[in-house]
Length: 501
Image (cartoon, helix red, strand yellow):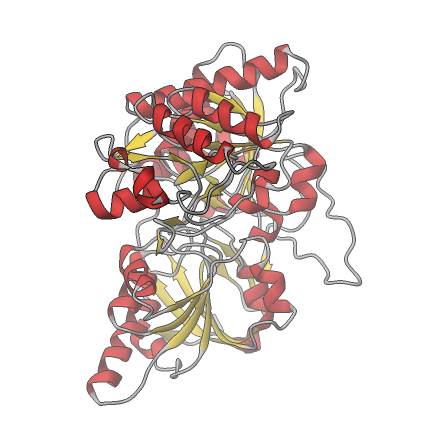
């Protein structure tokens, strides 16, 4: 190998205060696991010596604790984009100590190529292998790595010896030309290959290789399906079956996108259990453990993704059975897995989770109480706005009934009603299509809201009717549910009269 072999600590010494760093990965899958923690250690030493040390960090999506967690604990992050899921980073972003910019995941790579964020000093990339010509096989995700390899001044390679050679051929590396030279992306079905299984970097950029041997997959398993998420999954499944029966969806079905988490897993479990949903393809940004079961059973014929976000056990199972699964999965760059052009062309059904939804169909998917960042918008907007049918899911109540996820007005808007077709809770399915705003409100109350909160939501509408309008909204009481939660810890204690006095 022509590249110097470095320790993580030696590699970290190339990173200076104020640098902009790009990391591989999309979720913890494929994220670097040694060098970022060494950078955090360097930051601590610099701070102890009284010197400033902070970096700007870009990724494909969220990363892992050795990256976002360690760098946050070391007070080493100045700016972060486009998505995160680490509690430590969340705490610092909410405290205003990290400048966090929540972005659509399909846009961040091209925005960097356009020059919106200045130059990238160093990219840190986990790979399975790299040759002397700079040809490399990536790890268990792609993210924005192909663009980082193009735009970064220099590159540090983490060569993870636990990534098996059988991962060869599972990547589809395609970077579109930038306007005005861009052409159509040649993907016309989820299983189409558009690019190369190999990524490439100019060998002259490579600072060196850090050898690692780090476990793949999430350490903790996903939360098991419970009664609430099971009902949500069954309600989504029933809706899709009815759409086929009504002729609003092809009987051959359409590709689906599913977000991350236990609700998404519950929906996929319901699809697997159904005898009426035909085998389907997925065009999505992540595949979780439940997708592995679908691939093995044949319910999912093919999965196009950006990341294999499996638990550790599921990752080991995948590679143990890779001979059977190798032709059923491709990993693509985020700007392709989440690309609006492709999503619209092939008719993706999008299914994403919400923190809360309001009576008119607006969705908050990123900020609790309108102020506190949870994770971010992620790829939900990429899919929702361009989907054949867009579905949002959430439990109807939380925190021992003290919180209703159906509220008069969301405290933060990520997706407007114009992009939202269906809202599903454990209570049922609210279909917002073919309805005006007031009809949507009644549909959501009766089909999606929990019975405990329906009288309060009806009362809100009644009070708003006095003002009239196409959308029934009274600014004096629109956030009364949230005010009651802040003051009394329980939305059920809302008193509209107090806010209208």
